[in-house]
Image (cartoon, rainbow, N blue to C red; front, side, top):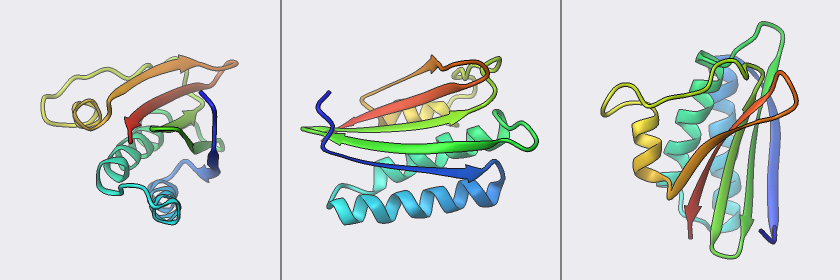
Length: 122
């Protein structure tokens, strides 16, 4: 993927950090002139999951976005690689991500990190 622009921010693994990440990401999407609604919902869900299910006391999470020709990549990194997200409840959580993203998945980083990513075709 040829990366054109990117955005990365490290945030506290708290509900406030998740909200701040969403606000900052939406402003960045707006500055890039990209669609807001679907990506904003994906970001909100992945950030909320990071602070709810991926939280380790004293450790932050990271939100990143990259734009390449025709593609927006959203990545949320947390420090709970032992907790791999799954789709569980219809109509909630990652079901929303699945419906809004063109692709999504999880990759392991160096222990103890994992990255949950979603791609949106532009």
